[in-house]
Length: 206
Image 1 (cartoon, rainbow, N blue to C red):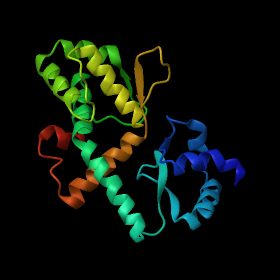
Image 2: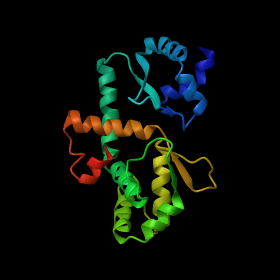
Image 3: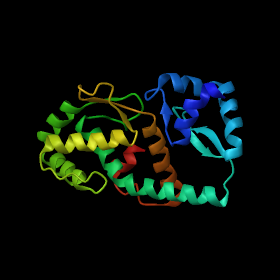
């Protein structure tokens, strides 16, 4: 298992691994033998390797839903729900600002300057962006559009939904974690009956 050591550490730390975030690691995790090796090692820890329905991202789940596992999942679920509305609003803003017909998915590229320029030219989008930047999830203290946008994208990158290949170039690539997020949203909508689809734009995302 030594060859899988660094990969296991990342997974146990809560990483989501996709083709965009780490192509080599994703390729290894896509191999059946690697999956068996990792699951064999994780079994005593009550963890297992899982992926979303599309197989675009790998992460760890629990093997059995013990009391401790349920408590941990509940706390993680609560954190996800807290960030859900600002992330949904961000998804809608990107979709509308860039004129996309569908929701973001892994591999999509977002050019920051294009997003800023299009937002500047639309008062409604500017107002929505200002409200989003002020949300406690982003907590922007600036009233400058450029600063607000950079903060929002930096925070979303920190949460693993975006990858910035070059720090000096202002463009981002969407990671597979966004597919996981949309799966969570669908689960909440279908199973928990929480109001995440009250507006046509939110429903269109799904």
